[in-house]
Image (cartoon, rainbow, N blue to C red; front, side, top):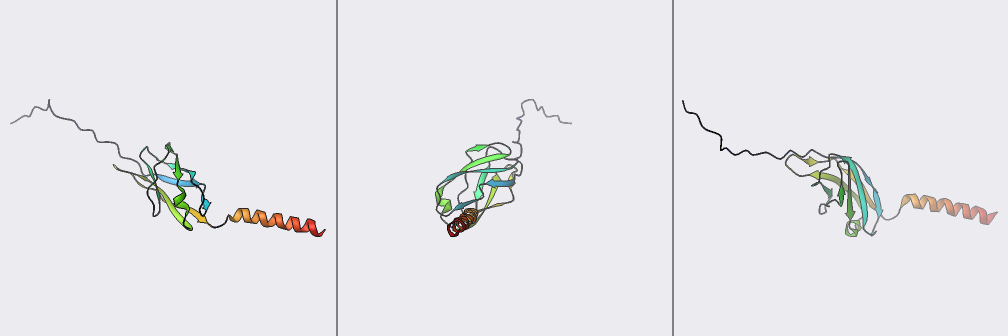
Length: 131
């Protein structure tokens, strides 16, 4: 029988697999068309130092800060020049990793909550004027 001496053998350690992230919320979740750049906070689980934020149809955003449950990214004004929804997700690269389910961010022409408040204020002013 033949015995091989393994004393000089090399040992390789595989990097641990990155988990698949989950994304539960983005804040803010909307902005006005042509707004200035801003900082967005994404909350979820299994974020890692190499996580990226995927913004549908755009270049992935590299987080400014991260923890396992929170990322912040600078959203450039150029991402706010088209109306409509954008699907946002968090991507953890390999080994392992994966892509979270998406959250919707909406770019709109007007802020509906501000418009409701303005309409109510106008009604109050009209009531006071006609009294």
